[in-house]
Length: 325
Length: 281
Image 1: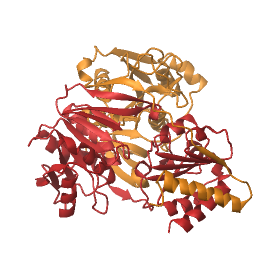
Image 2 (image 1 turned 180 degrees about the horizontal axis):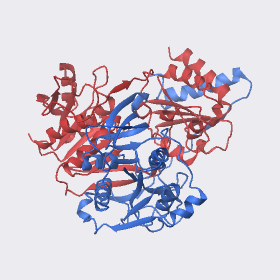
Image 3 (image 1 turned 90 degrees about the vertical axis):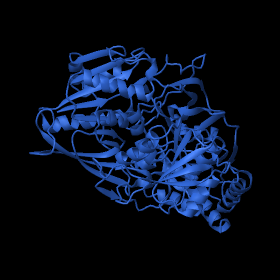
Image 4 (image 1 turned 30 degrees about the horizontal axis):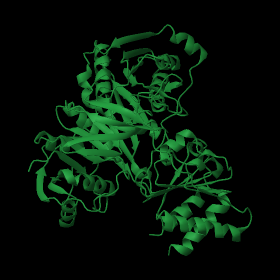
């Protein structure tokens, strides 16, 4: 069977299929997909990929560990080799720090267009059209492939924007081992400094607790971290908090930070500037805690608490300790 | 050394976005245009290099975009300290692939050898995060995106000389998900996209603004660069606003009364658990 779609699938550092890859796979299973994985595909991965709709599963064998660390050049060339030898119309990936970085390199390699950060796929037979947010989510637009690409369109899907399809069409799950066509890279990473935190990146977190200017200083973020630990949440910040030096830029949610779509977003001491709302408005549920009853954040909140975060957050943490055990 | 800095003009972050009546684009008439904030970090990095080496550094700002209603950002770039500017008048906001192609061909057409390309990691209007990596591939340069540190050193020798016969090494740090840092040690030329945290962009000075008026700004049309509709490959249609949320529930915390406060917080907890079903699963 000839599939139109290839999906770059990522494993997490425990060797399991990443949630965002499951979201992409299960939603596209109705049209039939092949999958490419860089790294080892064990029998449980293979079974799971098959149940998520994968037909061919390309496992890129890397005996000299060229791709053991991420390499923009290496990843782009490895996936380009699969694309070159096939007739895919679309190559998908969940939007991660890797796909966001190297997919455009593939795009330029083949003179094919790419569509980033898609939040909706419309499937009409073998025709696919997309929608994506613009201006950090202040509006959206449909994006139509004009079918004049020399090679496939490259598409990245925003994490948590497509719910996992609970009953995907099962694929054939045929494992195809592929050897790398190259044995050296022009440039590669020289050193990696791992973050101490094991927490999920904000863009993939299911729950986010963010603090704003009202946090008053960096140390007070410990109240948010204590609450986050009870929920398995990641901690974010508003631009005001980042610019005041209370939080690192990697924590910033909003138009000049990260755009997030968690299941639950808890905004503490954040008034809700338009550029902040743009970055978190697609969260499934929003809780706002703020002393100003007229703060714009309340217009987006499902549950608002008008009050001082320094009183509300510690009590919330206690309630969670008591009830989530 | 020639440093090319890619610059986009975008609506200010505080802009409320309205749509054109036929939904083909956003309404642009009341928009305040600014330099894409991430491009400011790229330009500042180029200017820091120029400040440091004093001579032999030529900074060229390149922009692809519509000149109506405004062309101010390239003049701002010149006022901040760029030496020259190239504008590709595109009449409309182009998708990333033809934008990267236009940048490539405009840079080639300038006939200046390319030693370093800097750009913002993404534009804050379309958020594609594509153009710098595409451009790197088109020039066959190493592509390092979202850098937070750029440390340049002049060398007496190396494997490849720049256009003026000099050799430069650069240590680049990029931050990836979860706060992990990757460090690359490379020789120029490279193409980097810049993230917040790299530096603090300067404001244009008054003498800078005066000088900018006399600096060279070249304009190319898309026809000059042999770019046409066929290079677009995708089309944006039907712009729309996200659906508005129904008003939520709002409570007032009983200040200073921890017992009543706890009752209220428990109520919100129960709603999150039983109504929203997002916690305590």
